[in-house]
Image (cartoon, rainbow, N blue to C red; front, side):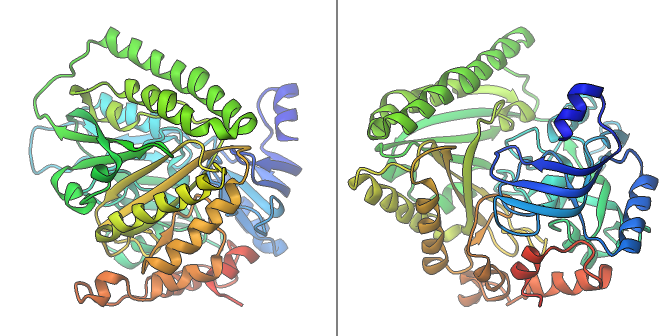
Length: 491
C-alpha cells in the first residue's frame, strides 16, 4: 500500500492509515493501523502523545534490514502493529567536528537516526575522519543498527553502538530527552535498545582520524583457518574467516594498519574495482547460486568448490592498501537471503566452528544442502551495552547464510541454534537476525558466561538491569509488543 502511494503520487504522505510494511528480506510483513514518516522532532512528539492518549503501542523502523520479529506483535510472518514510525526522512547531518592535528582531540559527528551508515561514512571521510568498527553492510540506518546492537569486525574495539556518546530521543510521554556519557546507566541501555526505550531521532558518534589498511587475503585449509581463532583475533586488529560450505578450504582476511600510506589504487582504479565488485555481487554470483540451490541442490558442493569460492576471492584483491571505509564496507549488494549469527566467548570460537561444520556435513551426508551461501566469523572487543551480544567479553560471531528459497534452510538453522545454546555457555543470538527459541535468551544475559565461571569476570545481570531502565522510561509499555514481553519474560 505504501509503495502504491509512492508510485502514484511521488513522495509518500506523512501519514497512511492501514498501511502494509515488509522488511527487505521479505520474511516479515506487518499491517499497521497507522504509519508515519515524520520529518522533525516535533512531529515525533505529536505522534507519541497521540498514541499515548489513544492507548496505542508504538514501534519504529529504519531501513528494514532485520530478519527478527522486532516490529510486529508476534513472531509470525504476517503480523500487525498499532502505530508504526519510519525515520527514513530524518537523514540530515547536524554537525561534524573538523579534523585537527592534536592527537588528544576526540572528534564526533551528530546525525539524524534515519541516515544510512554508508552516507555517514562518506561524510566523515570527507572531513578526514573515520568511524570505529562499522558494519560491513553500509545501507543500514543508524537508528536500526544501534537498536539491535550491530557489530563490526574490530578485535580491539567494542561494537559500533558503543561509540555513540549522546542520544536524543522522544520518551513514552512525548518529551524530548538528551542523554550523554554523564549518565552511564542510561547510555548502556540505549546503545542496544531494541526500540523499547523511546524514539531515537539523533545521535552523536565518536570518530577517529582517517586511516588506511592493507588488506591481506589468504587461502588456508579449513582446519588451519579454524584453529586458534582467539589468538588470531589478538594478533590482528581486524580479521574475518569465510568458509564456503562443503569445501576443505577457507579464506582468512586480515587488515593491517598502514599509517601515512596512501591507497594503492588511483581514484579511477577504485571506481573500476567498485563497479566490477557490484557486477559480481549483484548479477553473476547470486543468480548462479540461487539457480543451483533451488533447482540442483546436490550440485551445491561442486558449485561452492569451483565457482563461489573463487568468485568471492577475486573481489578482495590482496595486499592492496585501501581507505578503512572502502576495506570494511566490502558488501555493495545484499541479495535476499537468510542470516543467523551467534555470539560466543572468543576462546570458544574454535569449538563453535567445529560444531557448525560438523552439522553442515551431517546434512550433506544425507544429500541435504541447506547452507547455500557461506559462513563467516568475526571478533569484537567486549561491549559495555546491556543487551549487546558482546557484552562483558571478547566475542566471536559465527554467522551462516543461505539464499532465500533454499530447501530445508529453516530446519537446519533451528538445529544449529539449539546446539549453540546447549554446547556453548552464554551463546547469544544477533538481535537483528534469525532466531526462534526466545524463551532461552534471557538466561544468556543473566546467567554467568564461561569467563565468569572461570573467575575471569564478575557475574552480571545484564538483561535484568536493562529491564529496570526500561520500566523507568516506559512504565506503561508504550514501546513493547507481546513478542518482546515474551523475550523479556514480562507478564
